[in-house]
Each structure stands twice: as C-alpha cells, then as structure tokens.
Image (cartoon, helix red, strand yellow):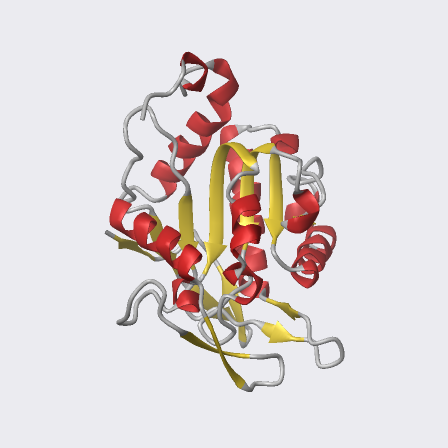
Length: 241
C-alpha cells in the first residue's frame, strides 16, 4: 500500500505519535517497534483483572484497568509534556466511564496531571470526534468476556478515533486468544448474574492476534495492596513476542 505525502509520520502534525512511541519504548524496552515509517497501536494486557458487577443495575466496571489507564495517562503527560488536552480516555461501557471520572476526581495524583484531559466518553458517544492520542479502557476480563467489544461496529469506531496513537488496556483472555480454536471460536463467558453464556469476538480476536504476532502486546502485573487488587504498569512486565 502506498500512502500520500501527508501521511509521513515525520511531519509536525504527528509529533504526538513520536512522543508516545518514545515513551512506550522507554517503559517497555522489549516491546517491538512498529514498522519504519508507520504507526502501530499497543495493547496492555492485565491478566487476572477483576470486573465488578453492580447488583442493582447489572453494570460492570474494572477498577484494576481504570487505575492502570489513569496511571499511564498521568505518566505520559508528566514524562513527555504532551498536552493533556490532546489525550482522551474512552471505554465501551458507560459504567466504566463513570468509574474513570470518579477516580480522576477523588485521587490527587490524577486531579492535577489530568486536569486538562477531556472527560471520558463511551465509544458510541465519541463517534464523529477524534484526538491525537486515545487510550481505551476495555473493562473486560477472562470471566466477564468481551462484553460490548464483541460488536464489530463498535470496534470500527474504537479503532478510528486517534490521529496519532492508540493504547488499549484490557485482558487477552477475554476473547480466549490463548486457548485452542479458530479466530471465530465460541468464547464462554458469564452474564451479570454469573450464568454462563456463549459469544463470538472474531473481529477483536483478529486484532489481538495481529498485535501478538507483531510484538505489540505487553503483560503488566496487577498487585495486591491492602487486600485489594490494584494495577500497576511500572512493575514487573512480561512481553508477548
């Protein structure tokens, strides 16, 4: 495929992509670089993520991934001096967006560094809009499954909101990628009441498989503190190569 001159990532309008990639390579030095002259997204895999279900509404949220996402965004702005307004955090779930907003307001480490970051939005709510760097907090897990992200139309929106860089935070096992079977294999998950359900997430599986083959997936440790699971991306890491 041949791209026009306006797609040259050395142009000033793609400065955010270069800052993001430099930041990522410094944090995860074993991560494979994207092809020369091209941009490539990164997937931050959070094995063992816990998704909590509201007993009244049935809505779900993953505080492990919320914290890791905000840590990543805050560190990115501090380290690269990237304009906070050029970063946006999205999520497929409205409940997850609410959790992101709540944690941003309640924790001082995010209040200052992310004050100019736009309010988080759902994938559907961000249609027709873009930003330089998009960080997507999937809110998925092996137990909960792919949830809304098995919807192909929602994925198309999710993967086209960034001008310069896309970072996805989630769990690979949500789509059963590590298990045997084709890319369209059935995934066993659980609904809000804990009942087993069956779904397919072929489109998302293909994306994850491609990223794994390209070495653009990094595992992060979810550490327990005060009997709670808290995510950190600055601790032990394991690379998918």
